[in-house]
Length: 335
Image (cartoon, rainbow, N blue to C red; front, top):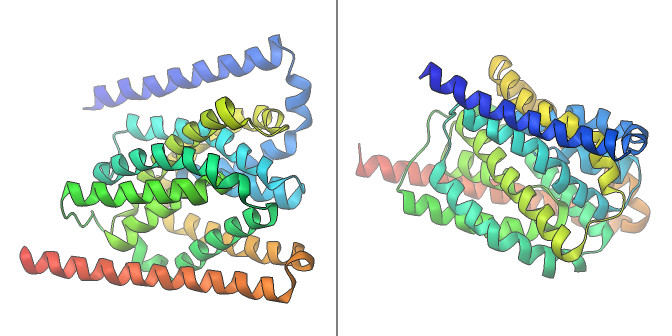
């Protein structure tokens, strides 16, 4: 088994070599080094973002999006496309690393989510995302991430205590994953460039009471798949926002190694501390968005955003209750 593990890790290392060879060709041979160098701030930010991508159920775009859109005041559409592009490298590298280490995954639900995303993400990119105003892209991101952060701030002990996974049957898991992939791909992922990983993770930990050692790697793989799909669909159909390539050049070599490094380090220090820190950042970015956009939102818009977070939290609690009921039902059938 050890021999096989080393062989699989060599596959990951070869993929890294292939990526860095292409990147060096772009910056050294084709002369893109000045562009990559001039965008060093996003590379610095993604050093943190890539760690979060590999160690939590939140993609690297969780850091990249607010840095570009809120700190650098660039268009939200650029932040979305950058999230797809940078995660296509970082999350894919982390996914290969996870597979190479043969970490356990919720395969049935993951397969369903991939199939759903394969359909939902392109549909969302073509028919939903183009009609969402910039301010609403920011708000969707802010509300979803704030809800997720608050959930972990008061449920992290329970979530971190799960062992294994409540299994019903593969068809049930596949169907749940299929709907998650279809709906989350068409909405939150297509609009913000991130988020389908968080939705799948939430279903795993609240509905199936899944161990974080299973739920988080599974969420990494679905975000990698959706990111590669999303950036390819945009490149060949709708086009990618100007400026994405230059930011990608600066950040890609960082996330290619940072995301799998996060997946490895978190196994040593535990996932709970990292989850708490990222959860707090999720809440802070929501407050930041409300402050920055207070002029355009007005009191009514700010109140509605807060209500949206509360509604999301109520939905999480319903999902948690449903998960508890399903566990009791399974125990009654198989004591």
